[in-house]
Amino acid sequence: TRWLDSTIVPNAEDITIEQCMNMTSGLYSYTEDPLLGDLHVPSAFFFDLGEEIALRAAPDDHPLAVAARLTSSVEVVCWSAAVAMAWMLWEVASAREQLKGHLVLGLDWLVVPSTIAMLTAIAFGGLMGLPKLRNTIGGWHKAAGSFLLPLLVWCFVSYVPFVWHPKVQVTEPGGVDYFQVGMLVDKAQFADESAYAKEQGLALPAGVPANPIYLPAPDEVAQAFYTGFTKAPVQKDAPWLHESLWHSIQIIFWGFVLSSLVGVPLGILAGTYASLGRLSEPFIEFFRYLPAPAFGALAVAILGIYDGPKIAIIVIGTLFQQVLIIANTTRKLEATIVEAARTLGTRGLKLLTKVVVPGILPDLYRDQRILLGWAWTYLIVAELIGTSSGITWYITQQARYQHFDNVYAAIMIIGIIGFGTDLVLARLGRRLFPWDRSQDRR
Image 1 (cartoon, rainbow, N blue to C red):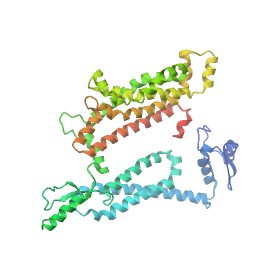
Image 2 (spheres, rainbow, N blue to C red):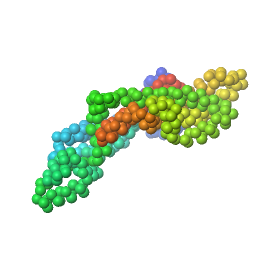
Image 3 (cartoon, rainbow, N blue to C red):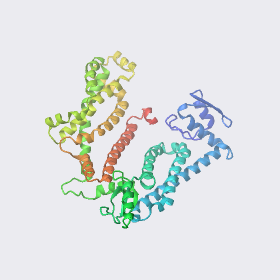
Image 4 (tube, one colour):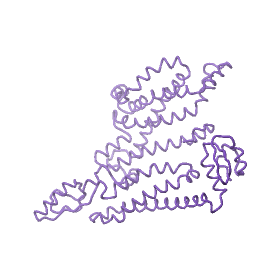
């Protein structure tokens, strides 16, 4: 059989079942299998290792082997069906402009079964295929599933006519004077006007079920996502989307850097020396409950109306939490390590740089990743202070003209950048701190 965890047995690829049993004998978990006899394996990889050994040792007609082949087949079929149904829904969404004026319920034979089939495929694919995918691609299927399920709900609400759709989009105004093609009206209002037109012998209006303007369909948001980077702004002096985005990234960068320059050293000192912690933390505990936007007017008065107050809000929003979190992380360092260093004569700056900081570095790095996400949550509020700028200006401008597809696209861009940055930092952390086993459980 093949050893599943090369970090536990370095440079070991293929071992026998007997060697595996000997190496894992006397550890945490215990099971009996009619094929393998008594098997002792660590509980952390008990299921994966036990399943792999049993499947490789089982004959072709053994139930375990049959179940493995069935699971693999169902997994391929379900995920393939999910991709096919997703493509089908995308084609329907792309053709919506050409289908206006036709009876939307006539598409139920395509839209509704497609959506239900896709949901079913994803559910079966997750239930049947996830254990095997976990061994091959290391959990990325869970990340994809966590995004895919909300997207499926969004598609279901957007494309299936009998799900919500409280509005009617006018395709033919008929004899109603104020109706216009593309106009959204409530269903009750549309029904009243249709009844009145019928009574008066006028041409009946026609329309299709629609959602409110503030809930665009996924294909509209995807198109806005693309055109935001390729189409010039309507206003001549308005910045491009990527220019607004870059400005916001700079605000986040400088705000978080300034916060870290003060918060990280202060947090380490407060966590290492109890007297300094007792002196500083009560005030910091008080200050962290004060909302950062409340200092907006004061920041504008001191720093002007441009980027200064925006950076200050990011600093205020993250600094005090940063000090407390890092101080708490520093206190979790094993006291025996610090006591041993002090017994050997290590004091002052040398104690911090040679013992404390190296001991907490993986956890400190992880804290900074979390706090960087915290800084992003203050971005919109910060950019509203003084002159509106950055991605916030773009969002408010698009909302003012009711271009909510652009609003959704801009909000998603923020999430993509933040999430992508966190993934890169997480991967970098595994390279910088390979001895930190806690990262492997994430």
